Length: 369
Image 1 (tube, rainbow, N blue to C red):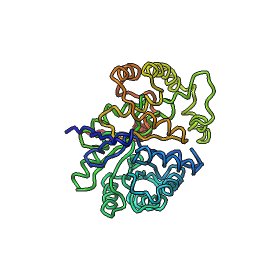
Image 2 (image 1 turned 90 degrees about the vertical axis):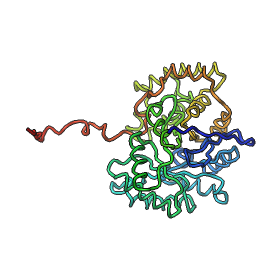
Image 3 (image 1 turned 90 degrees about the horizontal axis):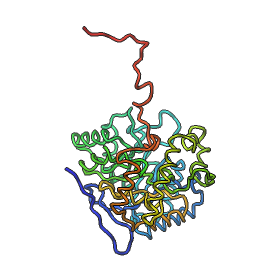
Image 4 (image 1 turned 30 degrees about the horizontal axis):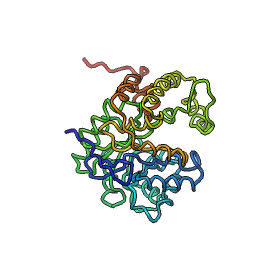
């Protein structure tokens, strides 16, 4: 059974409110993401607090963060900023375990229960509204994970269960395990979705619609590419992610190197998309964010600004609705259901690793007759 997105507009706010799947919970179509809060993004705590103030004043009622953002600093900033007004927002966080120890990671009961307690302390709250599994864990049975999360729901420490960057088949598995065992079900999936990363249209969105799950979009600007800040033949902005990628080490920096074939293709596509935006009378940034909200499966697009001015500009596009001609032009440039570069999937499935795709030929195969 498909499930349409219910949309309500508050006359005092330019931001839409949409129902999260079948929960009845109303979220603003724009959410504020806290990934850039803290030393890696914006170390100015006062400015981060002003961004939260602006978001709430503009009608945004969903704030999303994760324990790994700034090694917990993002949660601390948000928790402090929300003191005295916690009930004004739907607060989401993600569990991914910040520890570098090999034994302190994954989606086991032990680490989920420890993780939620640590997040609650940093957020200075007694509950998290939407607690999401940051990435799949192929080593942990989904029933163990859902049972731990179900216990947290019954304890009142979390209100809803969500996932992030899960393949469609794992969402189906989670749904049926929760049905069979009578556990709290996954009510939403947070997925990377943008003009450059349209794969969710092929499988994730049909699953969320069929099973009544909401969709939270992360990286609607494809890691900053769809702002138009990266241009062929021009210096890389010093405050961009590409410039900061050097702090991630060689592997992180390599992903964002402009000479990579995937990034060269992005630059080619950006030239065409910029013309579409110009013909529509829009900035590329506003067109890109508005694009993610057109799909009927999407509940909320999470904005991840680094500065106050970036957030103010993004909120300025809240009233934009793309017309069919503009959407058709985008489809001709980047086909529906496709992805420009694999790295934009946000997660590399372990079953795609080389050793997972090759039979161990050192051990003779058993032949049954």
